[in-house]
Image 1 (cartoon, helix red, strand yellow):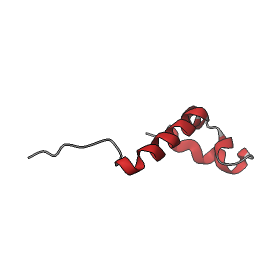
Image 2 (cartoon, rainbow, N blue to C red):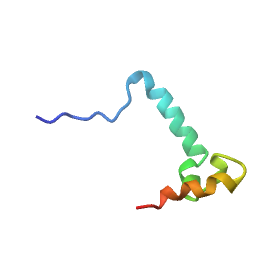
Image 3 (cartoon, rainbow, N blue to C red):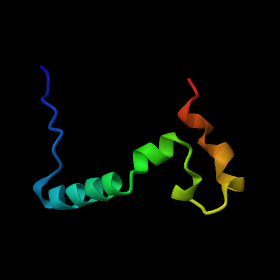
Length: 58
């Protein structure tokens, strides 16, 4: 017997999820993350730059 997975958040969370998605899109978070944009976390790249290596590890 298979269960159907519902990918929609509960109604009480939908507006919060949509707001968060809009902010992520507006701030281009995914693009900046994949370009190793340290500014997402800290203004100084010294500490964070080497921690983004997991993006390309296999």
